Structure formats: structure tokens, C-alpha cells
Image (tube, rainbow over all chains, first blue to last red; front, side, top):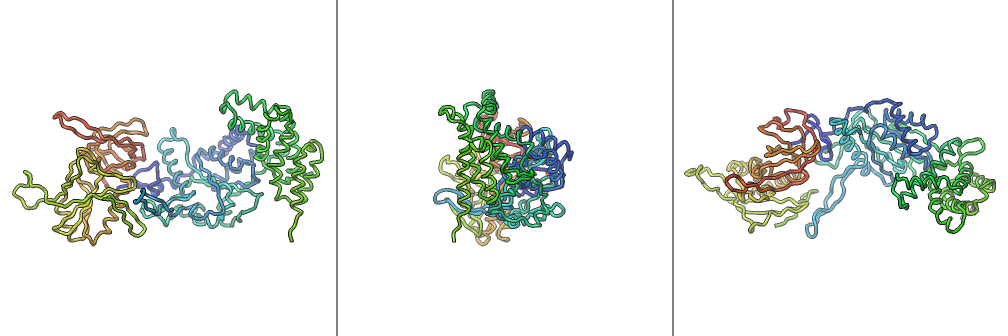
Length: 402
Length: 225
């Protein structure tokens, strides 16, 4: 059957002809200007109010790592790893897709296989097995599509590649799932992945372009249901730690979190549309509300108490996303508090006891005891429900069954 | 007739039209000769259109009682108003199949497979090819490049390259074996147009609305095919 092979031309859609993507396999990433890429990423980080510790150095490390291969961003939950992955992909001029790994992942989810499907209706409905690609092979094929359009008309199609972001990478038994990709991910040998389930000659293998990257994210705190990373995988990915903001960044972090919370409430439940003057007014009103300012002050004390011990070392690295979650609930309750005359600290207290305390279950008894003690000091004395919730947690932790 | 066939891992849902194969008419060109070719004189009830079902392959089957052979042909190419109801079959195709068991031909009558009952496996391979998306080189009646990503290509309904094109197939436009445009297009929509000739007859054209699918960079590609 007639086809346009990699020597004869190129396709913008390789979904029927994976082999045609061979044409793009050896093209390296364009314009490897580290400072320019990191600068674009930093501008976007600031525009999105993402607070990263030592952001410039962190971005520089991520950019250099991606110029050499695949990357895993590891760190506590809620520190913006997935957002950072998307920002960096965009700074490189790459589109991206995000998938979330699970403990069920196998080579089927990553490379592909045969999937049962139904064709026809009624008496003529028949089940059949249809070949499907996994997330890595599918992203690699889409990467070839993006490269082809870019090479054809770079002004009209400025994106130079397509990358895959795998969230919660360590939730998968990654050796089992990604094992078949070890050689092509290594970057120094064969760059194709053979597909046992394809019959057509032009679809027997998927090519991983040199421009293709995988960015994994990994929660290094919550280790429940997490598989160990083998040395084979750690050799193929550069691991970069993304921590919580420093104590010095906390004012900036809480301001950004309040804005994100207000933006979320306005977008989800507000009458105004995103980006309008009306919404901006709502956000400013929320951020400057004296009651919200008091909440931020109490929240700052609390976060300082759980994150940093007396030596300034990180204790429980509560992420910015968790702070945003708490402030979203404060924003939702704000209107009701005006009507009922209750103060916003009650709203904050409820939000912390419901959103933050349950996440402390993995902490050591000493850490919970230390946190409980600090709840009796300063403004944190106002958090009555939080105190009770921590007491319940302590009782649960000290209960043993013989 | 609708048929469901299961063969190993493969399954087909077929819509089958079946007729006998007969000798073609002598006409003026073959008057007095005995090396006549063959044909399937297709008959369908009234103006009933060819049944094309999603997920099914519509296929025509002819029976050559003289050689105990079947002939499979693409009924999709007979779907258009104005298309001849006859399918022409060369004597060589049937003779070769009777010696070899199965033979394919793809000329101005479209893809055909002649096969003996014992060579039915060849039918399944041929059906798989029929079901796959194809790249067709078309000599267009009109070509309109609307923007870099979209084109409208008009083909003659009497041109078998036009009539075989389905939605999702790919087209390259050429004239006298030279590319008119280096793009490979994907057919997104097909319209049938009726145009009156100066002689007052209806002439059917097929209008293909296409999106850009790829580019041919090798000028020899067409010659290599």
C-alpha cells in the first residue's frame, strides 16, 4: 500500500504511521540558551504567584537537567511541582500532557497493548481487540506531530516538541511499567520501542524523538503505596528537590495563597468572569479584609510552627497548596460570617481542623506533641477546634490493639 | 446480505452484494472476437443506495461458474449516482486466479481479487487492505487551496481514484505524474455534485473538503509508486 515514508516526506499526524516519525528522531532541542529559558520560566513562575525556594537556582538546575535528559521533581505535596513542570515545558517551547501514575500501572499503560472494543450494533455487535498506545508511546507520537508542524512552519507553529508529565511517578511499580523503555530512555542507543501488538509494518515500533522529555513528579513525604525507585530508573532521570518556601518567603507566600484562594472562589462561584475588573475588585477586597489579614497572621504562625523548628530546619513541609486550600474555605465562609456576625478566625479554625490536621497522621508523636504545645501560644490560642482535632489525633495515635 | 466473519484474532462485519459473473457484451470493438472479458451486471432494487454501515466493509462478490472462482470488488466505488452498475473483469485476472488460486488487480475498475474457494485467506488480507486508510494520487478537476491548512479538491465521479476515496483517506494531487502541490491531504467531508454538460447530460463530481496531513519532499516519490 502507498505511503509517505520518512525519506519521502513528513506527516503532521503520525497516528497511522509511527515509522514516519523516524525523520525527527535525531533533532536536538533548539536554542539551548539556559539563561533565556530559565528567565522565561521565572517570569511565568512570578506571574502565577508560585513561590519556590531559591527560584532562580532551582530553575537553572531544572533547565540544565532537561537539556541533558529526563527529570523527576521530588518534594513535599503542594509545593507546585506539577505547575513547575508545565511552566518549564512551556519555557522550552513545548506543549505537554499530564498523566497520573497509579499502583496498577503496567507496560500496557506506558507502552500499550490490545484493548477489547465493540464494533457494530445489535446482532452485528462484535467484540474485537484493538491496539492502543500507552502514555509514553502516545506522547512520543504526538511529539513527532508537533516537531513536524514546527519544522514545516516555525512561525505558525512555535512549539518545538511535546513532553509528557507523569504526576506521582513513584505510585507506579515503575520498573515493571517503564522497564521496556529503559534502552530508548537511556538516550545513547536504540530510540525505538517495539510494539508486539501491532501488525502493520509502519506501526511495529514507536520512535522517541531526541526532543522528547518526560518530567516526573514525586511526593517524597507521603510514602504510602509508594514503590521504590530502582537504580536503573534513577540513572535515566535526574532528580531535583522542590521544597517548601523558606521562612523569609512566607509573607509573599501567604499573599499569593490568599490571591489564589480568592481567584478560585470568584471563578467557581462568583458572578463575574475571570480577568474582569469586578473579579479583580473582589480579590483585592478579600486580600485587604482585616479579618482575612488576621487569618493570614494566625496561619503564618501555624505554618511556621509545623514547618520550621527552632534551628530553622524543616519539620513537616506543609505545601503552599494546602495553605491555599485552607484560605479557599475561609473565602467561602467569609460572606456567611458577615451575615451571622461571626469572625473569620472561626472559619480559619474549622478549615485547619478539617484540611490540615487529618494530614498530620503520618507525623511522629513527638512532632504532634510539639505542634500541640505551640497551639497554646500567641494568636494560635484562638484555634479551639484545631486544638481539639489535634487532641483527637493524639488519642488515636496512642490507642493500640493487642 | 450482512455477514459476520471471525478468523483467528480478526473479525469482519461485511455487507455483501452477490451476482454471477457473465461474459461482457461484444459491442462494436470486439464484434466477431472470442476473447471477450467478463463483467458483473450489478442490479439493485430501484435507486436504493449501496448500504454503507459504520464499522462494516461493503463488498461485491461475483461467481464465475466456468472456473469455480469468486471475485471480490469494492462496492463503495459503486455508491455514487451515475456510476455504472457493471463491474468489468479482465479475462487475464480470472485465468491467472484459476491457475494460482488467487490474484489481485487494481486498475480503472478499482481493487479486485479473484480467488478460488480454497484460497479464502487471500480474501481476508484483501478485506484488511480495503479497510485501511489509503493514499490516493488524484488528478483533480479543480483544486482550491483555501489556506495553508485546508483545501477543496474536486474529482470526477468517473475517475476510479476519486470514487475510492473515503473520509479519513489521504490524497495527493497530481497531473500527468507530476505533483500539483506537495501536500498530503486528509479527506474530512465528501459531497456529490451534479453538473450539466454542454450536451445537457448530468456529470457527477465529488468535492473533497480536506485538511493538511503531511508534505512530500522527495520529488521522485510519485515516480517510485
